[in-house]
Length: 224
Image (cartoon, rainbow, N blue to C red; front, top):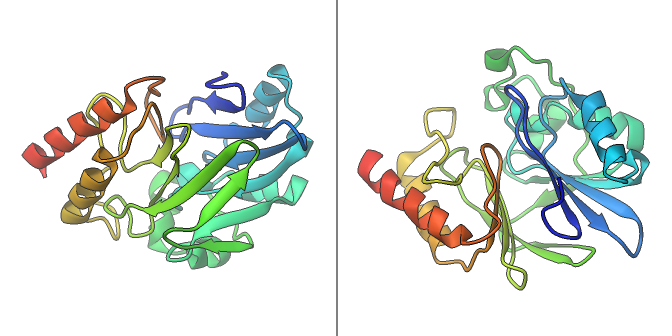
């Protein structure tokens, strides 16, 4: 599903996260943001092709955090297409080594295959891909290394599991989760000018994304 002329949205199925794909039209390359569990990997490739995108053009994969519902499909993409893999530095070891509690692989009963990380992202880094210039924002609370990716000019926020639409927000009861940190992260995000809110689960917002974030902050203050 096209969100903008160069951003595509593939809603998650069952436990899967949403998957977003960014097209660099000049170079014909694709960047994948989160991968789902991998359970529907073949279906994901079919959906890409249906949208006129070639899976062989995947050159970069970014994870918003390493829970297996966002990272489980990484190894299959890496094995087939050898993209550059980008993960926040605080969670990169989990991806490369596997087998730790941060992945939640045992909880979801999905296997995780350790995968090489090429770029260990840090707060304030930028990722330029096609027309997007994405700022890396460390937004802990759901996990310590959760990130959001923000294009300031186009007002697009890929928010992972930090904040969702319609007043929802990420759980804080998993390893490294923190209610106070999530509140601070939501406060930070509420100050951004966001039109397109593209979260890790649930629906997307194609306008007034900031209002969804502010509603989530309001509910989080009452509940956390």
